[in-house]
Length: 241
Image (cartoon, rainbow, N blue to C red; front, side):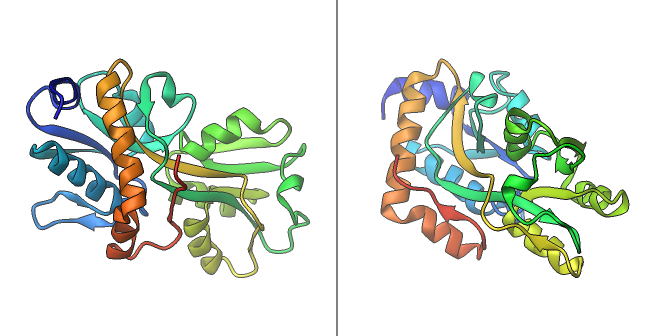
């Protein structure tokens, strides 16, 4: 292993992996010792094994908080959705997995397609600083984004305030739709959240190592095995870069 890779990805001799605990598809539980378990922790563990180093998980309740800590020395690699705003401080790999983001509309809604959402008077409930919120912030021109601090809160605002649209990841919206009889998930998706692995910008050797590792993990079936092992629905292996 290149000394540059080790010094950039594990300057303390331990691989510190930032984990977004708010993504229920990528983190599905905790071990008896309290460490996060799931596809993202599994990927981080495999990287540590390849480097021949112990791992320490650094959990964050929200993805925005993980992204904010980039370059601070709090973590060495971060497993998080890749997004242009975050990429200003984080060197991302290509995606290892992806999740479709789409819309839920209430019973009797006149909205029937994705194209009908971005119109004046339409209010979209969304979780602040999620990757799909950042996408909506860049692309929505006429509708109004109503942000909240959690998935559950976004759904409550959507219901209690009678908003026209709830934005979210399709697997979560499927559960929300079951709890809201008559609601509908629109066909297709407005974006796909690209789950990737990043390190601080400037870690050129470390970033190249992570990129190669991710491509190998997809090709070898490692990502698919982790998805199957943790029984995750709605998470797909990303295409080769």
